[in-house]
Image (cartoon, rainbow, N blue to C red):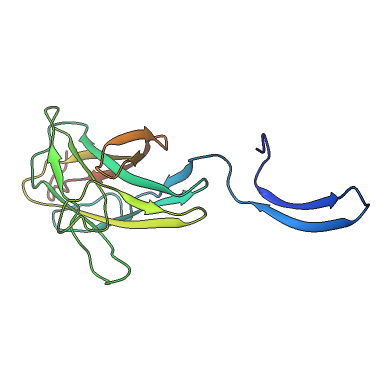
Length: 193
């Protein structure tokens, strides 16, 4: 077993008891057993000044460890009030079929929206996660629009990625929470105060 060896390319030299030498290259392609990096871009455009306008964000997950089954989860909170079901529409860009499936969410007892992403989010609400192999990247382009009568204010979108088993049970968190704020701003015309 290799201990404390960082990822990279190594040259391995082997000499047997007769003095014969063989050289080969070994590539260590991961940092640890199960690990990912996760990043979240800022929403654009931001703020939104009315209902029905789309804003875009990108969640990027890179597998830096062994093959792993993941489920990115989100919680959306509003700084000034509780969120109601239907206050916003959340979609992701499916690159293979080039369309925008919905990402379902529910409202918890605190008035926050929560849910998770899966390649079949639009149809089955599958919680079993998706397997990503070592060195692969999963980029999830997200778009959000607010629907009337959503409250105005700062909406915080917080994403955390978990390792899950084949039944969808959480095994461990693989990332810290990444957040992006989106402001729904009310423009009031004709006011001078």
